[in-house]
Image (cartoon, rainbow, N blue to C red; front, side, top):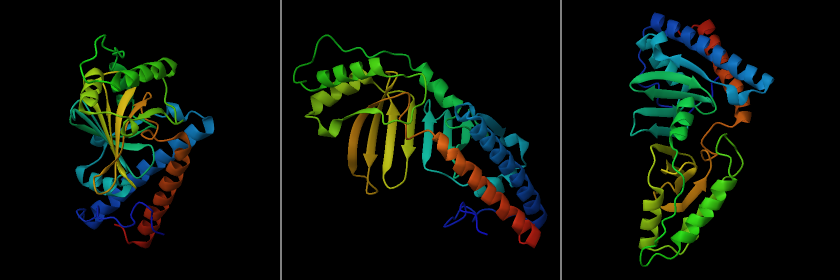
Length: 269
């Protein structure tokens, strides 16, 4: 059996372990995957997916075992940076499992969205204040800000939601340079940056206003397809969706089986 995490992968290229170390690393990885599977399964059964929060510090494993573990769990499509890189998160190929670096300390976190992201969101507390005076040659931006203000008043910014977020497509607006500069100055830049890869690439950044995000969608050639402003606690495509925990259980189970079969055959360790 071939685990789906290993297909078309080059991340094993730098994993060079002797057979005994490889065997021990495989056993450590089995224990980790079994724990992930059980926790995700429990959250599904109890319907407490949003409460799922578990941390596995790297200090629990030998460095050489970590090479094997990280190669096994792979990488996903979402990366998050907080406070100019003080905190970094990268989704793994197992849904809801994240690799987190927090002030230099590395860990794996099992959650729909790691709590450190929610904490950073809640530290953004500015309300949207529309300037009383509009600079000369600014025409479209004030109406966009009023629309955002109305959307914010209706939005629940206290919880994650996977419904489509309220969005204003700036690429469809008659904005000139002055309008864009006015919007940028009013909304400011926050401390959370998000990159997503896939069929297209997305760059999302929080603003200084709680609940407002700038989102840019680019094709693989780097051409901008969409420039938008989104109103949400966090854009809904960023967190792992609750139903994806079924994939968490499935992928962890399949990878467990692959490791156990290879240990039994002697192709590992």
